[in-house]
Amino acid sequence: MDYNQSWAAKGHAGNMHRHMYARSMQRAAVNIYKTDNSYEMLLFAPGRIREHFHLDVKGNQLNVSYTPPENFPRPDWIRREYSRGGFVRTFTLDETVDTTKISAKYVDGVLQISIPVIPGKEIVKQEINVE
Image (cartoon, rainbow, N blue to C red; front, top):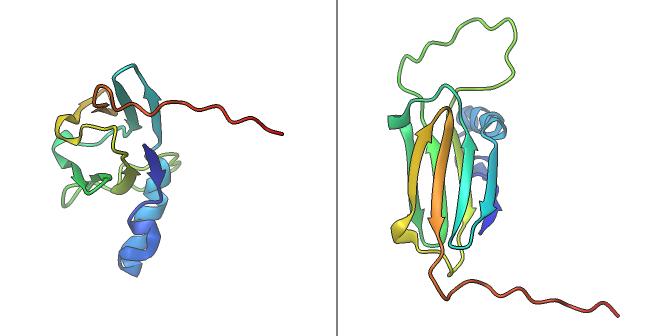
């Protein structure tokens, strides 16, 4: 599995939205770790509403996005260190992943995504000698 630059940051969104998504994407930090039978992704997204997350797989791309609801309150911040705005993150999945069994849940401000690996398809680590 590999991280790719977001869809919006690649220039696919209009100019008005590009800045919002590029800035917010940086605020949706992701940690990924591997277990014996899955990749586990933890996407830090405090203050979001569970129903406004969207995950989909197209080809070998996992897209994770969030769109805030209409009329979401935007206070006059005195100090602002994280965003509750929209974002798009894209990840490349390899052939070892079972895309039909990906699951997600939103708990305590963290979107937890489990990406199962197909048994027997794990990529074998290969050492390369440096001469």
